[in-house]
Amino acid sequence: MMQMAASIIVSLFLFCCSFTSTEAKDTCEAYAPVGGSFVVPLQHKLQTLDNLRWKHNKTKIFHRLSNETRSGKPDDINRNGSLRLTNLKRSSEGLYIPEVFNTNGEPLLNGKGLYLCILDPVPKPGLQIECVLPNVKFTCIPGKTAYDTLEWFQNDKPLSEENEKTVLRVASEVPHYSFKCKISNRVSSMNSESLIQNCMGSSESIFPKELFGLDFRIMASILASLGGLALLLIIILFVCCIRAIKEKQKQVKEEEELRLGWTNSEGQHQHRHQPPKRHHHCHGQTGPRQHRSRQHREPRYQRSKPQARPRSDTQDSQAMGPDKHAPPCPKPRKTAIPAQRM
Image (cartoon, rainbow, N blue to C red):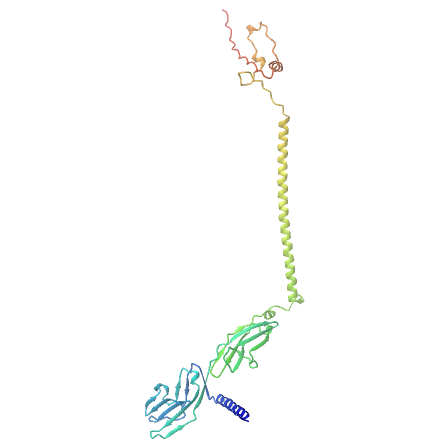
C-alpha cells in the first residue's frame, strides 16, 4: 500500500509539473530575441511624485520614490514609466510586474504584469539544388535553431502551397527561374540566397524537339557520327598523299643513283681498254726521245761514211735485258755551215 501511494504521489507531481510548464509556455505574451531589446509598457498615467516599482519574477529591479531613484538606473525607464530592457539574455525571460503608489502609500496600480519570452534569432538558411531528371529538387536547410514557418519564393513571388523543406519541379518548366526559401519565428526571419537551376533538363526547351522529322538527340548523334567518319576519311587521304610524295621522292633518288653508277662504270671500262702509251727514256734524259730520222741526220759532208743500221726499240730492249739500263741518248750535233771557198 505504501509503494502504491508513493507511485501515485510521484505521478501527480509529474503531471502538475508538465501542466505548469505547458501553462507557462502558453502564457508568453511578448517575445524578444537574444541580444535584442524590449520595452515593457506601463498601463497607467504616471504622475511626477508617484512611487514606481518594477519586479522581475518577484525580484525588485527598479524603484523610484518622489523623483528619486532608489534602485536601478534612471535610464531603465522612459518618461511615461515603461520599463526599458536591453541586451536580453535567456535569463531575462519571465514575468515583469509594475507597482504604482501615491505619496500616501496607497496603491494606484496592481497589474498582473507581462510575461516575456526570449528566443534565439533564426540563422540564414541554406539552399541546395539536386538534378533528378526530368525534375529538379530544391532543399531548404534551416539549421539547428527552431523555426515556426517556412516559405518558398519563385522569382520573388511566394508559393503559398509550399511549406515543406523540399520543393520538386519539372526542370523544363522552370528554365532560368530563381528559387529561395525563408524561415521565421516570433522574433526574426531570414531569407536564403536566390539560386537558378541549371539542370540538363532545362536545356531541352532551348533546342527543338525534332530535326529533319526525327528526334533531335537521334539526329544529333547521326550528324556527329557522319562528321567523325568524314574526319577519318580526310586523315586517311592526307596520310596516303604524304606516303605517295615520299615514294616519288625515293624513286627519283634511286634513279639518280643508278644513273650516276652507270656513268662511273662506263668511265672505268673505257680507261681499262685504252692501251698505255710507251715512252722510251734515254739514260740521262728525262724528256721524250726525238724522232730517229731527225736525231741521226748527219751533215752532207759526212754522208759518204757508212752508217750502221739502226736497231728497233724491241731489239734494244731484248739486247739490254730486263736488268740493264738503256744506253745514253746521243746528244744532238751542232751543224756548222761550211765556209765557202774562195
